[in-house]
Amino acid sequence: MDRKQIFDEVKETLLESVGKRCCFMDGDVTMLASLQDDLGIDSLDCSYVAEHLEAKFGIDLSDDEIEAWWTVEDIVNTLASKI
Image 1 (cartoon, rainbow, N blue to C red):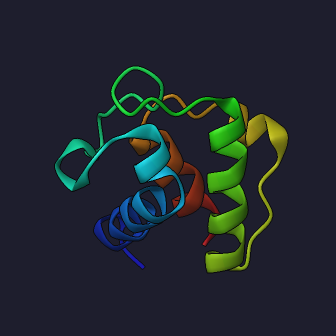
Image 2 (image 1 turned 30 degrees about the vertical axis):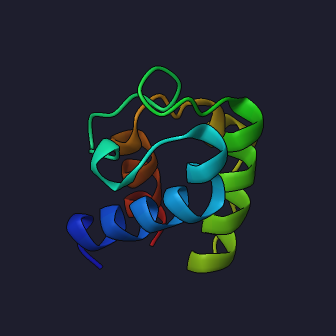
Image 3 (image 1 turned 135 degrees about the horizontal axis):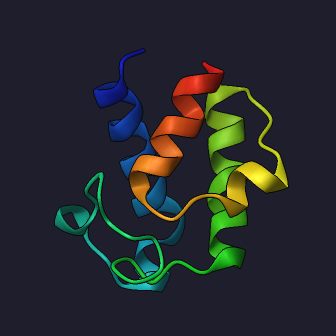
């Protein structure tokens, strides 16, 4: 799976899992989007997103990996290193 495919899966997961609650839309999710500043995602939301990604990709994510997520690209990089 290439980075573009991973990004598309991350984007879909973000929109489905926390998009409505955090009030962001498809066009807001870019590689450089800040999870907190641009998308309004807090640490609890990140944990929720991580659970969805773990199920989707069949991987385990550590708390340290999740806490290092500042941008959408950080999520993509983490996933790219695991799949």
